[in-house]
Image (tube, rainbow, N blue to C red; front, side, top):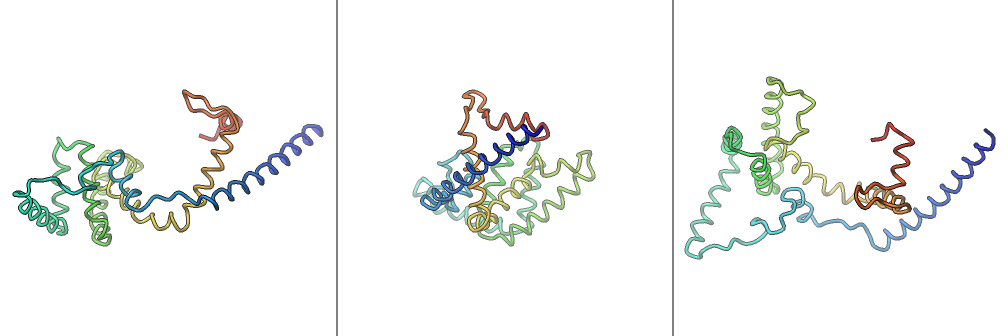
Length: 218
């Protein structure tokens, strides 16, 4: 036991010394290169419209000049309707009551609504509070388990809520949480890269050993 204790103590000292050196190197790298924050537009679009860099909301519409005034007028009037709480709630409820309204449609509609409302967060929050209250009531009345609420993102309201958090977390991530989270990621990656990584499963030997040593870690 004494020999084992001395061996473990020696390994811990070496690991601690390595960690101190590596963290110093990591900190100096970050000081030189900085944290690679995305700009707000890119950050928001990765959540609202992932894997879609050529969506129509990102560029000017290519339409017939003759039809352009009518289309712009229609969009402007529809935008005014979106800012009417009664209309917007009825619009969302009507869409969700349609059995042909697929999951992809729900995600797309929620994303486009949030693109429209991202500059009017007070109104957006008011809409979300109403939709979520209805969703909670529906869940309690139905057979769905309360724990599943907000977990599957099966409704327009749930997807809107994800975007709502995304918008409001941007400043916090840039000013507070972003740097320590990125440093944690870099530190973990640095440890992973010390050992071999399976090309097929992407399992890292370093992390696999830790998982086997601590079966409660998932």
